[in-house]
Image 1: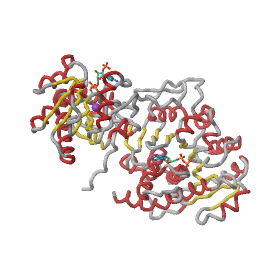
Image 2 (image 1 turned 30 degrees about the vertical axis):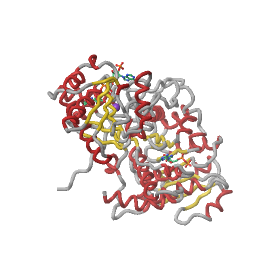
Image 3 (image 1 turned 90 degrees about the vertical axis):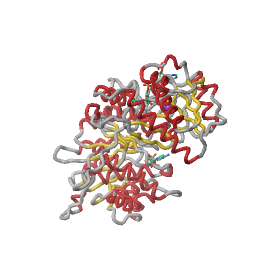
Length: 528
Ligand SMILES: NC(=O)C1=CN([C@@H]2O[C@H](COP(=O)(O)OP(=O)(O)OC[C@H]3O[C@@H](n4cnc5c(N)ncnc54)[C@H](OP(=O)(O)O)[C@@H]3O)[C@@H](O)[C@H]2O)[C@@H](O)CC1
Ligand SMILES: Nc1ncnc2c1ncn2[C@@H]1O[C@H](COP(=O)(O)OP(=O)(O)O)[C@@H](O)[C@H]1O
Ligand SMILES: [K+]
């Protein structure tokens, strides 16, 4: 029997996790049984860490909710395992309720105030202050406790999420615990993948506590880790009898004479990603410089929006990457409009609008949204944070649709400051408002689809922060779209391939290196 493919890895918001919990309890599993298993998993992870670092003294900081409850359970198991356990409570533990109260009552040791815990002697700190219920920036005693834990510098094991990190958004307010490891339960949360939360978690250990995956049918999560399991089944498959046109013909628009490199990077990436043919469309003045650098990639001239209209009369051109280093003037808007208008039901066309093509519309995102919605083209927009803010800085005249996530931005403007508004929510709201797949780039690139699905990538190395690497990404997306991969999956796949190529190369990476790493990354993907 062939082994079934790995399923996509869902990320559950704290409220979705609450539903998973509630459905499990409604199915007959006591809530305290879940907490016992969670606390046991924390204790096991603590024992593993101590085996690495040595020592037998553990300080556990327990908060006023069920995260604290997990802490009291772990304290009991660790004491039973022969360790010296000091427990500090934030808030009076006599006011604990429900399962956390039970856990406190079952803890046979002493409980002191957090301030009384001596961090100088602890070999390991367990942070069970706040988890899924963390709801506002830390202040007062809670803030002081977190700052004291960080300043002491002991290795920290966080329960569920490092305290101070919002599990839904990865945001932190005033401060958060810096953990060496984070033990979480059932499924990871967006806050484990989104920055700055991801950086505060250390290694994330996913453990099971008796919640069945079947509860996800009811919850229908729409956020996923960007891993091959999310898009593998949509990868292009070569046909024995296939010809190059069956793999799509990708156009990439070049900028003027002194700004041609970005398009060539995108074009080469598109070809490596598997587009059957790639044509660079160059202003006449830049033909010679482009011609001097191209071999397998073809070259055509187009200067005006009319030239582009004529070019697109050839219906074999199926995808266009438009924007890298193109210029932000009126002509850019006109050509984008020609591209969007060229798509018809019987003339499929996919567009990757990147860089200057986004800035040229800024701040009139509603104009872009109108054009996209009126178009039959499949559209992917690939802004980095700066381009996103520029494009979406203007207030909506008519309220755009609200984000499906629990912490929806207000939509006064889609480009909210980063505080407690998540990158995930902003990308989702923009995808829905514009009617295109949004790739909101960065170290935690979010790909959001207008249908509400979203992925978060956690595999990209910081070496990708190098000039031209975004152009390569745009080309990769174009190359996959050319082979008819669906837009959301193509964008997510390209983001993952881009990250893996960066990992494969290591230090010293420049954008030119990326396209030629693709064969190795693709071969590894085929083997996995
Ligand atoms: N769901 C599951 O399946 C399972 C969940 N489990 C565990 O439960 C955890 C979630 O527990 P939870 O819902 O009780 O929330 P939790 O994180 O303890 O915090 C709530 C308390 O903190 C307070 N508070 C919040 N922010 C604050 C701030 N900035 N500064 C000060 N106070 C603040 C808040 O006060 P309030 O906002 O009500 O005033 C409230 O008192 C989850 O992370 C996991 O570890 C496991 O046992 C296994 C099964
Ligand atoms: N710190 C980082 N870690 C991982 N990936 C990053 C980081 N910074 C940027 N990237 C990635 O590098 C690419 C940069 O794209 P972009 O900002 O458009 O650059 P350029 O315009 O120079 O091509 C994006 O894919 C982005 O996700
Ligand atoms: K915690």
